[in-house]
Length: 170
Image 1 (cartoon, rainbow, N blue to C red):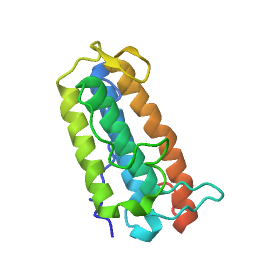
Image 2 (tube, rainbow, N blue to C red; image 1 turned 30 degrees about the vertical axis):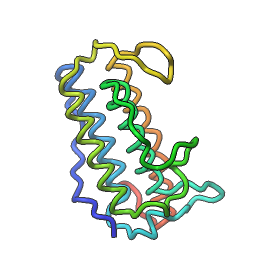
Image 3 (tube, one colour; image 1 turned 90 degrees about the vertical axis):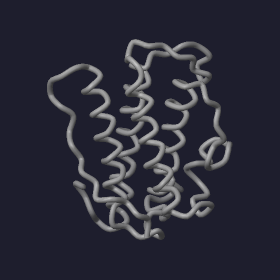
Image 4 (spheres, helix red, strand yellow; image 1 turned 135 degrees about the horizontal axis):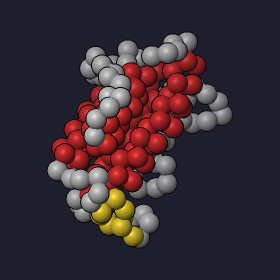
């Protein structure tokens, strides 16, 4: 079984700096995705439970690992890295049997920790080059995009988890 630590979801503060609220909201959604995966077996994490979609919870963890690495390491730091789960479109979401679940979970935790560290050294107003758009983007854009990306995929995770074991409201 994949080793997902006991996840504590702490909602973002209702007041504070824009930066504090944005990064706390991003952590809330990171932890929401982990919560959807908690207590499940490796087979359940790899189950495409909402047909006809091939989407799995493990695929979502793989995808968000790659998303974390792209926006924080490649865009903010300019470090071009090798993709962990292939190079094709959506290959991180598919072929989930290519890496053990515990390795995927470990990579997700590591990518999130690296992203937190990178974010702490940069202002939301700072601009960085984004290859995807072939133009500069602000760290603010990256923070908001990451919140949107997680929120969308947490919705997918809700449906998958409910189809796997009936659990809702996690």
